[in-house]
Length: 294
Image (cartoon, rainbow, N blue to C red):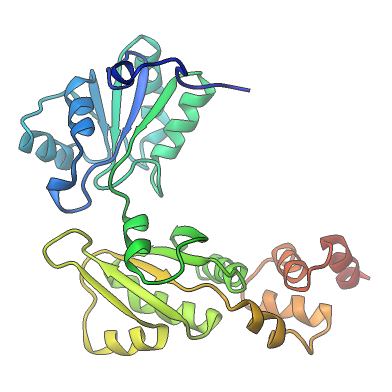
């Protein structure tokens, strides 16, 4: 068991910049006024900044009058660059990790750096602030007590359908990210598997053109036939209706084998389909496996 952090630190200590520490610094997702005082202090006090795009972060730092050495850290260099950053942290330097917008390590390669630091007993602390998925959830007018964050769906059709089928009977509110040029296809895929549900489409959050559209999946599809999607989207979709799952499940009149074959036809691998059927029917997975392979 690893324990990270100093339980006896005072308020002043907690706000001090400490060598050998990785700071996850949340940055604005659009409105620069959303930066926190603590974030500015950390960005101005660390030895160096690791950024998803050093050009974007350079503009942010310059806006607030901060000048710091930067290194790039993004999806395609995270393995080798992560090792370099960890070595510098081991040697006593402090580092602020930032993404282009929002909280590092959330649907972001920063999660790999946090894991690497944990494996090397390096202290990691978070400087909280903007997070698009939480902002969208709060604005959605949908249930917020229980939710699942999925980030971007896979661009591979089979993997995409597999994941959506795994989620279709989940009663929690679902949150997805999507780019404008993929939005209409994503909505088509979701309604095909989920059926029609309430959705909040949140775009350009905190920016001048912020827009929240609260409608249904079918209403959204109809709207975007006439209006081209613009900006980055957060999709907040209501979860499955628990009573409807029990009373009107599509598989009610299917045998276990037919149920598995249905999911396989939707693009699932056989073992994933078996797991999905076991979950649907509230059965042990090995019972479904035996039925299919007998």
